[in-house]
Length: 248
Image 1 (cartoon, rainbow, N blue to C red):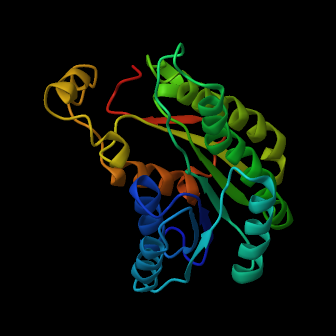
Image 2 (image 1 turned 90 degrees about the horizontal axis):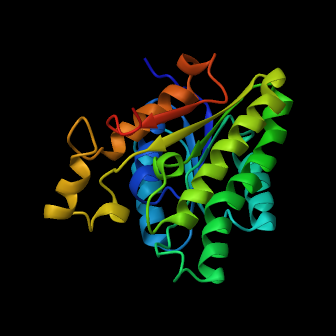
């Protein structure tokens, strides 16, 4: 049974890692996929072809979600191409890790624009077609670091914590229109952003994870599928931590 048959999903930052896994999972369940990328057109084209081979419509857009005008143009282009937007996954993000004493104002602003302002930008735009349809699911990607904090990641933690407060507020604003807005807070997941955690460094983190391992991108994709589909139809304004038990 396909849970997202003929739905249109917009996923930011989907050319690799968690975003790519979500795009593939949604396509497996029948969703047509619009996705964004910033740099590698080669990877974007490869993903387009991979998704199309699953029998769905797929198109990549080179777009910076942290730029308001670009986000507005993106939403308009997706609606023009696909007809509507049923699901939005705000996944794009960066990290600029440094102790606060060394963190520059430019690094702080860069993280806030890419991680938090991008969520504002895209959520504001996708609300319009969703309100018209009186249906929709918005999924914002936070992090376990936005809940627990982490030394050396003050900017990243602040941006991801901001996503949680933003999501809870938006869920209250648009719930009457049958639009849901939720957060996924991944723990440590095996991606390009965590590849440096190996050997003894990885073992240190394993001690704080009751399940004793890092997550996989498919773990996050499965959670996104649940929240995007009718299985999550009575869930809004919530934070789903997919972290192996780190937030107990």
